[in-house]
Amino acid sequence: MIQNSAMLIELNVSMWTGRKMDKRVSDEIDVAKNTKARGGNYHKKLMAGTGKLERVQTLVSALRVWHYKNTLPWADSGSRLLPMAHFFDYKTELNTRIQDIETAVDSFLMDYPTLVSAAAFQLGDLFDASEYPDVGSLRSKFSVSYVFLPVPMAGDFRIDVAEESKEELRSEYEKFFNRKLQDAMHDAWTRLYDCVKHLSERLADAPEAKTTKSGTVTRQRFHTTLITNANELCSLLSALNVTGDPKLEQARQALERAVNGATADSLKDSDELRRHTKTQIDAILDMF
Image 1 (tube, one colour):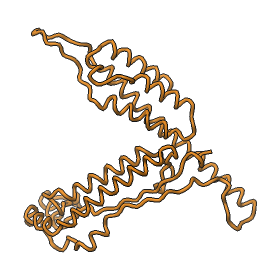
Image 2 (cartoon, rainbow, N blue to C red):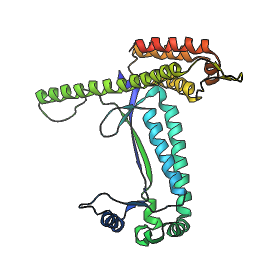
Image 3 (cartoon, helix red, strand yellow):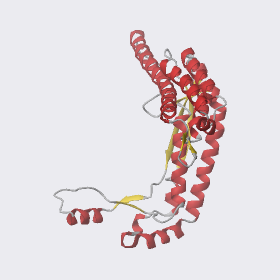
Image 4 (spheres, rainbow, N blue to C red):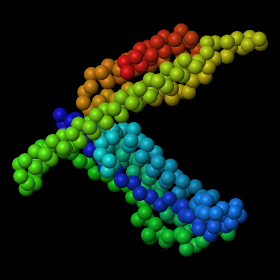
């Protein structure tokens, strides 16, 4: 049962963007460009020339990317499916990332008055002191919260309605549940397919070694992430396969074998290894 192999995680992140639409400048641009209607809006960066808010934004963006990478889609409201096999690693990493964000926010707020002065110098005539909230209210604009929830069972409707209506609710929820589970597993399959397809394309693009007139041997360069991303996905899919799909596991193991021991340098230096690896990768593509 999926209720025993996964749970739901709701992650909510909010932060101050430090951006503001300048209506006056937007109007000036429309006049200068002779537009007949509002042609666009000019948004200014209130903390232009300073880096501490950007540090927070970078950490928040990385948190969101990591969260989506380590979970599967579920509800439109934002709930994501988290495999129980991945729970402790996820929880540990989540707390570390939240701590990093909180530290960056504290550092930003501590220097905020100085940063506003620096932004005033950078923005020149665009600076408007009234657009900057005080430190007290600004802190409330940064928050990261989460809650773990059980995956509801189809028959768990504890409401006072007629049994006929309750059965209808159960039926509708079962349809929703099956559709969401299919979507979640489709996401896992898509990640595997995208990785394998990218590998196949990169290996196909790599020409064999060429010798220049000067005697220099040139070869296609591969990024380290070509293999490390595949290895990381293989490890992650072991947990994300919440339904125990044997075909997904078969494809995952095939990818694991194909890249086992390979590196970006070894693929670059050995035409034979590259051709052999591509043959294995293409065999996985045939599974789709």
